[in-house]
Amino acid sequence: MLQQGRLLLLTITKSLIKNKTMQEKHNDDVIGRARVKDTPELEAYYKELETLGAGALWTVANDIEPWEPRTSSVPMLWKYDDLRELVLKSSELVTPEQAGRRVVYLVNDKRKDVSAAVGWLYTGIQVTRPGESTSAHRHKASALRFIMEGKGGYTVVDGNKITFEVNDFVITPNGTWHEHGVAADGKTCIWQDGLDIPLVNALEANDYAVYDGKQPLGVPINYSPLTYGSPGLLPADKVWDKPYSPLFKYSWKNVYPALLEMAKVNEGSPFDGILMHYSNPMTGGHVMQTMGASMQLLRPSEHTKAHKHTGSFVYQCAKGHGYSIIGGKRFDWKERDIFCVPSWVNHEHVNLSNTEDACLFSFNDLPVMNALGLYQEKEYEENNGYQKVE
Ligand SMILES: [Fe+2]
Ligand SMILES: [Fe+2]
Image 1 (cartoon, protein in one colour):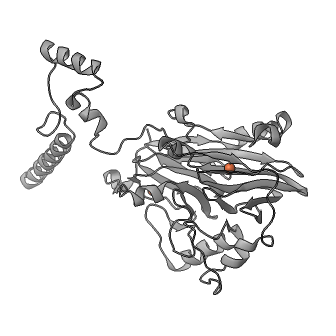
Image 2 (cartoon, rainbow, N blue to C red):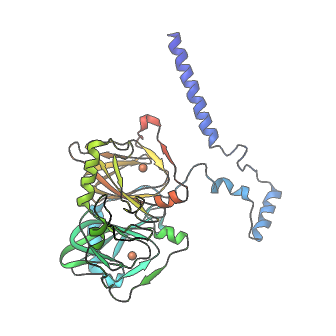
Image 3 (tube, rainbow, N blue to C red):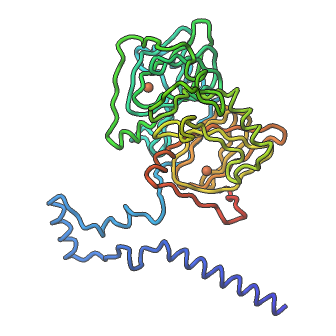
């Protein structure tokens, strides 16, 4: 009994010490952090500096140098059932010619000033009716698409016409001329666009140009996926020197079986289940310089452990239904719902079916995080790795 009491006391003391250390770690009242108290003399000094376009660093240092990565975005979920009718309605209200791009964009409650869905990423839902096509244009922002519904849709990237189907993933890298359309005998197509417009604008590097007329097709239809789309095989007689993937389309008919094959012999990640990155077949790296994308499979009833990392993520449920806990809040999703995970916010995913798998498409700014040496991640350690829902 006495021994048990001692053990309990020891555990409590240990946890108090641990908590104290953690609190101290994030306490601005320590040497090394700015902790200057205001005085009338200092306030007058600050005012004088301000008149010269200057300031004392210690008045802002703790704010501009947070202890840990800090996001200004909030986790959000956009339900397709709520949005679909309004997206379709846009096709009655404006033509693609008038709108340039007929898109309903999804904006984070805390990122309206930069039109971002999360962090520095933009996303929108675009609708194109049979027989319609957009004008061609290009921009320094990179773009990607994930196809949500319809038939007969196509995109033309630098003179390369590519047809696509539901759950296909398509890229239009920065600087490439591109236009989209749906064949006259097709069905209204809806797809999700993902761009790094907010990032490229933040870097003050975006531009936009409109092509005069339609692009001439320089190669046979589906040249890119037919040339570069076979796993583990590259054409012997081609030279590719661009900084992005020569494969412009990743077909669901190849991607989903790849996930199933991997699941046969792998446990996968405790945080993501079976997660595979769309990759540049020439390098094995990300598909584009600023945005990456992945598809993940959650097995029946799978509940991943929580973690957080830098980088912003936009998800679309490609198959099945379930929920994600993001920053302690539960977001239920099913096929076509879109949600976001902001940087350094804990998240875990759950497949609610005990018989069917669920698949989540996602795109991110990881190429930027990696290239700049800013990526870090942390496992959620409390409560056996699962967040408590608020
Ligand atoms: Fe574009
Ligand atoms: Fe994650």
